[in-house]
Image 1 (cartoon, rainbow, N blue to C red):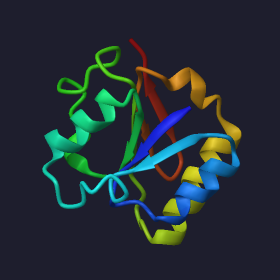
Image 2 (image 1 turned 60 degrees about the horizontal axis):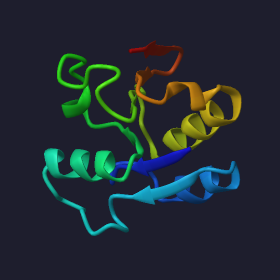
Image 3 (image 1 turned 45 degrees about the horizontal axis):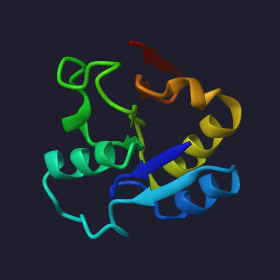
Image 4 (image 1 turned 120 degrees about the vertical axis):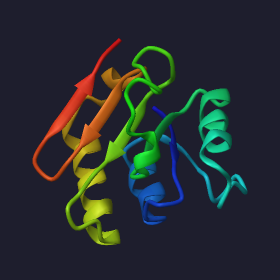
Length: 118
């Protein structure tokens, strides 16, 4: 899966997800650190990438309606330490059929995965 990781996620996730066979791009590597959200979002869409973030600005399902984009994973942990985020995202990508999440709006919490499909 082609994935873009937002700057608010641990950098080690890039290697962890690449080891699982994913094509990873990051906001940081693309030089978009501190860019406004619409610029980051457009970059992910132009590159046909599934976007992974913990930024609540991407939480409005009306603005990011399933089927209108390449996919969005919003990670919402109660205690989002760098280690907890890396472990949770890695575990999800190992255990779930994330390929089926293309064009979906997905929210992951400590105990749940909610998938909104087109």
